[in-house]
Amino acid sequence: MSDQGLDPEDRKILTLARSTRARNGVPEGAAVRDETGRTYVAGSVELPSLRLSALRTAVAMAVASGATSLEAAAVVGEAETVPEEDRAAVRDLGGSGTPVLLAGPDGVPHTTLTAG
Image (cartoon, rainbow, N blue to C red; front, side):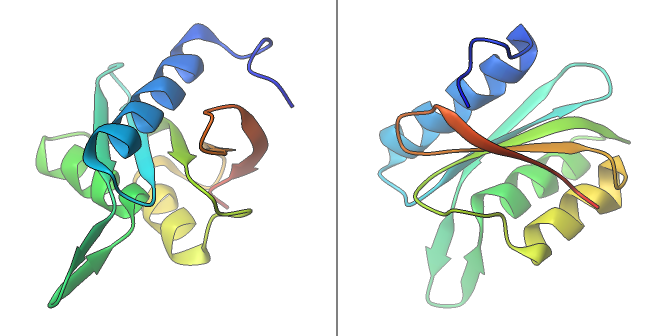
């Protein structure tokens, strides 16, 4: 799968997720787009008392900022799939049909899942 056929807004959240991962030196970066087109970006959080994936962190940032729905999500990292807990967070806010793009460290998507 390449990013050539992607909607420009989906390409944007992939770029934001990749940039966050690289800039912060974290295992994964994620970005989500809400119903108004606003984007929320996060890296994974690994503290002794708190562990959050990048995607769950991005969803939490969207909720904390007043988002009421999600249009799409993107995750950049080494993983070959998106864990059910992460998809559940997207589903809680965006619904089961919300697309979740998964890309390697180079930012090129290799899988598109739904939150459901």
